[in-house]
Image 1 (cartoon, helix red, strand yellow):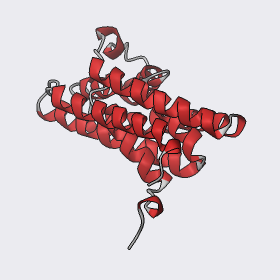
Image 2 (cartoon, helix red, strand yellow; image 1 turned 135 degrees about the vertical axis):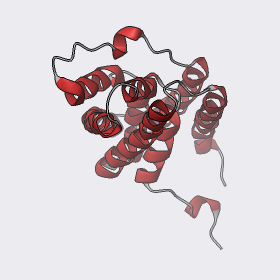
Image 3 (tube, one colour; image 1 turned 135 degrees about the horizontal axis):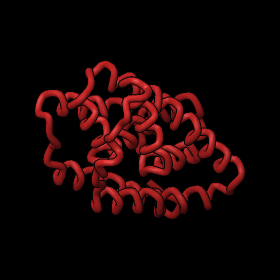
Image 4 (cartoon, one colour; image 1 turned 120 degrees about the vertical axis):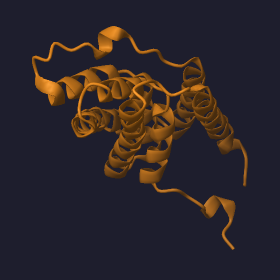
Length: 197
Protein backbone atom coordinates (compact mmCIF):
# COMPACT_ATOMS: atom_id res chain seq x y z
CA UNK A 1 0.00 0.00 0.00
CA UNK A 2 1.35 3.42 -0.96
CA UNK A 3 2.02 5.97 1.73
CA UNK A 4 0.70 9.53 1.26
CA UNK A 5 4.17 10.98 0.69
CA UNK A 6 4.76 8.51 -2.19
CA UNK A 7 1.75 9.76 -4.17
CA UNK A 8 2.93 12.45 -6.56
CA UNK A 9 1.40 13.98 -9.63
CA UNK A 10 3.58 14.72 -12.62
CA UNK A 11 4.54 18.37 -13.24
CA UNK A 12 2.52 18.19 -16.47
CA UNK A 13 -0.70 17.24 -14.63
CA UNK A 14 -0.07 19.74 -11.82
CA UNK A 15 0.37 22.56 -14.32
CA UNK A 16 -2.61 21.44 -16.41
CA UNK A 17 -4.93 21.21 -13.39
CA UNK A 18 -4.03 24.52 -11.75
CA UNK A 19 -3.91 26.57 -14.95
CA UNK A 20 -7.25 25.09 -16.07
CA UNK A 21 -8.73 26.10 -12.69
CA UNK A 22 -7.12 29.56 -12.82
CA UNK A 23 -8.47 30.25 -16.30
CA UNK A 24 -12.09 29.43 -15.42
CA UNK A 25 -13.92 32.77 -15.34
CA UNK A 26 -10.70 34.66 -16.05
CA UNK A 27 -10.55 37.72 -18.28
CA UNK A 28 -8.71 35.89 -21.06
CA UNK A 29 -11.36 33.16 -21.08
CA UNK A 30 -13.94 35.91 -21.58
CA UNK A 31 -11.80 37.28 -24.43
CA UNK A 32 -11.83 33.84 -26.10
CA UNK A 33 -15.59 33.59 -25.62
CA UNK A 34 -16.15 37.03 -27.12
CA UNK A 35 -13.99 36.27 -30.16
CA UNK A 36 -15.89 33.00 -30.67
CA UNK A 37 -19.05 35.01 -31.30
CA UNK A 38 -17.30 36.78 -34.21
CA UNK A 39 -14.80 34.35 -35.77
CA UNK A 40 -14.63 30.65 -36.65
CA UNK A 41 -13.92 28.49 -33.58
CA UNK A 42 -10.87 26.90 -35.25
CA UNK A 43 -9.30 30.33 -35.87
CA UNK A 44 -9.97 31.47 -32.30
CA UNK A 45 -8.56 28.25 -30.85
CA UNK A 46 -5.45 28.47 -33.05
CA UNK A 47 -4.82 32.08 -32.02
CA UNK A 48 -5.31 31.24 -28.34
CA UNK A 49 -2.96 28.23 -28.61
CA UNK A 50 -0.13 30.16 -30.26
CA UNK A 51 -0.41 33.07 -27.81
CA UNK A 52 -0.52 30.67 -24.84
CA UNK A 53 2.55 28.74 -26.02
CA UNK A 54 4.55 31.97 -26.21
CA UNK A 55 3.34 33.52 -22.93
CA UNK A 56 3.76 30.31 -20.97
CA UNK A 57 7.23 29.72 -22.43
CA UNK A 58 8.22 33.07 -20.93
CA UNK A 59 6.39 32.28 -17.68
CA UNK A 60 8.09 28.91 -17.20
CA UNK A 61 11.48 30.44 -17.95
CA UNK A 62 10.91 33.11 -15.27
CA UNK A 63 9.67 30.50 -12.79
CA UNK A 64 12.61 28.18 -13.39
CA UNK A 65 15.05 31.07 -12.94
CA UNK A 66 13.41 32.02 -9.64
CA UNK A 67 13.48 28.37 -8.54
CA UNK A 68 17.23 28.10 -9.08
CA UNK A 69 18.09 31.47 -7.56
CA UNK A 70 15.98 31.36 -4.38
CA UNK A 71 16.14 28.99 -1.37
CA UNK A 72 13.47 26.27 -1.18
CA UNK A 73 11.79 27.78 1.90
CA UNK A 74 11.41 31.13 0.12
CA UNK A 75 9.86 29.40 -2.90
CA UNK A 76 7.45 27.43 -0.64
CA UNK A 77 6.37 30.53 1.30
CA UNK A 78 5.99 32.64 -1.85
CA UNK A 79 4.11 29.84 -3.64
CA UNK A 80 1.71 29.30 -0.75
CA UNK A 81 0.95 33.00 -0.50
CA UNK A 82 0.65 33.27 -4.29
CA UNK A 83 -1.92 30.46 -4.45
CA UNK A 84 -3.97 32.12 -1.69
CA UNK A 85 -3.79 35.44 -3.58
CA UNK A 86 -4.87 33.66 -6.81
CA UNK A 87 -7.84 32.25 -4.88
CA UNK A 88 -8.85 35.69 -3.65
CA UNK A 89 -8.29 37.10 -7.16
CA UNK A 90 -10.55 34.36 -8.55
CA UNK A 91 -13.27 35.21 -6.01
CA UNK A 92 -13.09 38.85 -7.02
CA UNK A 93 -13.49 37.86 -10.67
CA UNK A 94 -12.50 39.59 -13.86
CA UNK A 95 -14.52 41.76 -16.17
CA UNK A 96 -14.14 42.04 -19.90
CA UNK A 97 -13.48 45.54 -21.13
CA UNK A 98 -15.00 46.31 -24.53
CA UNK A 99 -11.68 47.73 -25.67
CA UNK A 100 -10.07 44.31 -25.24
CA UNK A 101 -12.29 42.68 -27.85
CA UNK A 102 -12.37 45.53 -30.34
CA UNK A 103 -10.16 44.95 -33.31
CA UNK A 104 -9.33 46.99 -36.35
CA UNK A 105 -9.05 43.83 -38.45
CA UNK A 106 -5.74 45.08 -39.82
CA UNK A 107 -4.15 41.70 -39.06
CA UNK A 108 -6.92 39.30 -40.01
CA UNK A 109 -8.82 37.11 -37.53
CA UNK A 110 -5.96 34.78 -36.53
CA UNK A 111 -3.42 37.50 -35.73
CA UNK A 112 -6.10 39.66 -34.13
CA UNK A 113 -6.99 36.85 -31.72
CA UNK A 114 -3.37 35.85 -31.07
CA UNK A 115 -2.11 39.40 -30.42
CA UNK A 116 -5.10 40.39 -28.29
CA UNK A 117 -4.90 37.20 -26.27
CA UNK A 118 -1.12 37.54 -25.80
CA UNK A 119 -1.47 41.12 -24.53
CA UNK A 120 -4.42 40.24 -22.28
CA UNK A 121 -2.45 37.36 -20.75
CA UNK A 122 0.66 39.40 -19.86
CA UNK A 123 0.69 39.88 -16.09
CA UNK A 124 -2.60 37.97 -15.77
CA UNK A 125 -3.40 35.49 -12.99
CA UNK A 126 -2.68 32.44 -15.17
CA UNK A 127 0.71 33.79 -16.25
CA UNK A 128 1.67 34.40 -12.63
CA UNK A 129 0.32 30.98 -11.62
CA UNK A 130 2.50 29.39 -14.32
CA UNK A 131 5.56 31.24 -12.98
CA UNK A 132 4.73 29.96 -9.49
CA UNK A 133 4.26 26.33 -10.60
CA UNK A 134 7.47 26.42 -12.66
CA UNK A 135 9.46 27.73 -9.67
CA UNK A 136 8.19 24.80 -7.58
CA UNK A 137 8.37 21.97 -10.11
CA UNK A 138 11.57 22.91 -11.99
CA UNK A 139 10.66 20.68 -14.93
CA UNK A 140 10.56 23.02 -17.92
CA UNK A 141 8.90 21.13 -20.78
CA UNK A 142 6.17 19.31 -18.77
CA UNK A 143 5.17 22.52 -16.94
CA UNK A 144 5.16 24.53 -20.17
CA UNK A 145 3.07 21.96 -22.04
CA UNK A 146 0.80 21.22 -19.06
CA UNK A 147 0.05 24.89 -18.45
CA UNK A 148 -0.57 25.42 -22.16
CA UNK A 149 -2.94 22.43 -22.41
CA UNK A 150 -4.81 23.53 -19.28
CA UNK A 151 -5.25 27.02 -20.68
CA UNK A 152 -6.32 25.82 -24.13
CA UNK A 153 -8.84 23.36 -22.63
CA UNK A 154 -10.42 26.08 -20.49
CA UNK A 155 -10.53 28.52 -23.40
CA UNK A 156 -11.79 25.77 -25.70
CA UNK A 157 -14.81 25.44 -23.41
CA UNK A 158 -15.31 29.20 -23.62
CA UNK A 159 -15.11 29.07 -27.42
CA UNK A 160 -17.79 26.36 -27.52
CA UNK A 161 -20.01 28.39 -25.20
CA UNK A 162 -19.38 31.55 -27.24
CA UNK A 163 -20.38 29.73 -30.42
CA UNK A 164 -23.40 27.90 -29.04
CA UNK A 165 -24.84 30.44 -26.65
CA UNK A 166 -23.27 33.67 -27.83
CA UNK A 167 -23.13 34.93 -24.24
CA UNK A 168 -21.24 34.52 -21.00
CA UNK A 169 -21.87 31.53 -18.74
CA UNK A 170 -22.93 32.20 -15.14
CA UNK A 171 -19.58 32.12 -13.35
CA UNK A 172 -20.25 32.17 -9.60
CA UNK A 173 -20.06 28.42 -8.95
CA UNK A 174 -16.99 28.06 -11.17
CA UNK A 175 -15.33 31.01 -9.43
CA UNK A 176 -16.02 29.65 -5.95
CA UNK A 177 -14.71 26.16 -6.78
CA UNK A 178 -11.57 27.51 -8.46
CA UNK A 179 -10.94 29.92 -5.59
CA UNK A 180 -11.33 27.14 -3.02
CA UNK A 181 -8.81 24.97 -4.88
CA UNK A 182 -6.23 27.76 -4.87
CA UNK A 183 -6.76 28.81 -1.25
CA UNK A 184 -6.64 25.24 0.10
CA UNK A 185 -3.53 24.51 -1.97
CA UNK A 186 -1.91 27.73 -0.74
CA UNK A 187 -2.57 26.85 2.91
CA UNK A 188 -1.28 23.30 2.37
CA UNK A 189 1.87 24.64 0.66
CA UNK A 190 2.53 26.96 3.60
CA UNK A 191 2.09 24.31 6.30
CA UNK A 192 3.52 21.29 4.44
CA UNK A 193 7.15 21.87 5.58
CA UNK A 194 5.98 21.75 9.21
CA UNK A 195 3.87 18.57 9.10
CA UNK A 196 4.67 14.95 8.51
CA UNK A 197 2.15 12.83 6.63
